Image (cartoon, rainbow, N blue to C red; front, side, top):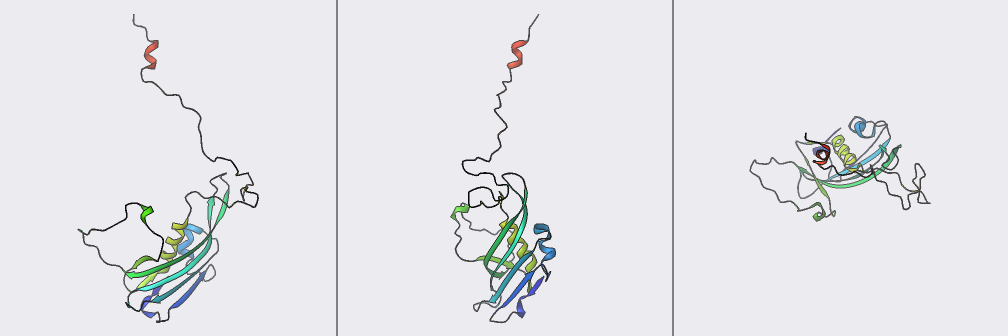
Length: 184
């Protein structure tokens, strides 16, 4: 779904999306399949620039995942809030130079992120797709219950190590087989 940014009034405008309104269904299908979602976005033009906008909102949905502990399929609850500044994209010259932090730990999560748009429209479907994709956990696991057990399979998580160990591997010496060779 495209939002025409020039049509947004000075006081801003709010859009609400869900499975029934269906504007984002196709954009989110690859991530959440047919699961329900509820998303809201509020866009306000910034007074300092007619082409820059303040974007705030949230999305609540579930992601079909596989438990990293036991391998059982489950739906991971996702509740993401965002605050971004929407700016017109600029073309980058071929010999451009950028400053960047040394390490991701040097980045601070304070303040809004910046999102670029091109032309006069903003693709909300692509925007929400990226928010959900970036929020997908690398190691999905359901929450613990009140006893400290897995909320899905009910195994105890206390003092349990979830790692793969294929056993001890004996080192192979490249000349070990020469010991049994008889000459003559």
